[in-house]
Image (cartoon, rainbow, N blue to C red; front, side, top):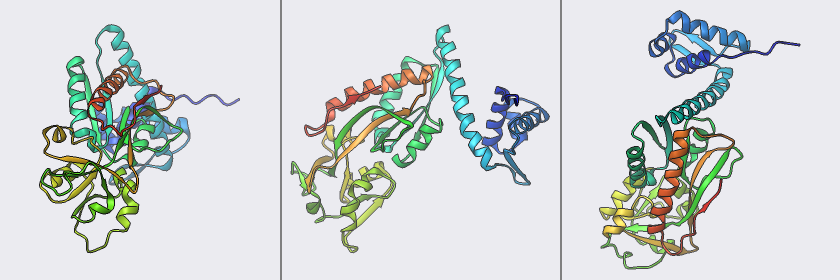
Length: 318
């Protein structure tokens, strides 16, 4: 019977650092280890696995196909190690740790700053990293362990993703108060084409919802396209045209009546689903677990006060 191959923690830390920095010399500086010691750890790892993990060249080190596969495993192992250290710290009463959050742009404008401020006030020794990305890239980051939790619109159901919280929001036309559509309580997509349009580029869930409508717009129509919800909001504020989004990201504008959100009801109501996601079958580090609980509590309170009457109720599952 072949002896089991053993992969030690030090080798994994060295591998991950070399992967990120692309150099054994830079990794040795970062880890405060001798270059020869880091090199031995990588060599030992390759010997244990019986495969080459890095391509060596004059430009540095790059991952082989096997190295990319092992990198995914290493990130999971290191995240689990962070969880262990966080649990030990929590037992000691230190409550320190680090959280990586991925969010789409809309919640990052108002919701996320408020949630992070509240959380870091309660737990000043816990640091937070925030990635603002499109929904399409979100599942990969969560499943690969690069982030602990994701907040995104319209993520498809995947076996490796666990949806902890979800709520539907009506997509609407967003205009300045002096816009001709501002007085309406509902609007059709066809009515919107009477005016200049501010549209989302591919990669955003809004574009996916409106793709059939977008494809029918005449080429000569006055259109501004952007991949930024924040920029879309500013363009609508300046009276540049009709933008499209949910109320998430324009809560303060609605409260101050500097923007109007008019639900789209024809040809039918268009709902966009905001959800909180983590990787399936993963026990979150203590810090991340605290953060997710705060995130969901804040979302329930915030969305409960700003959701229009035709939005659906939130559901919470574990």
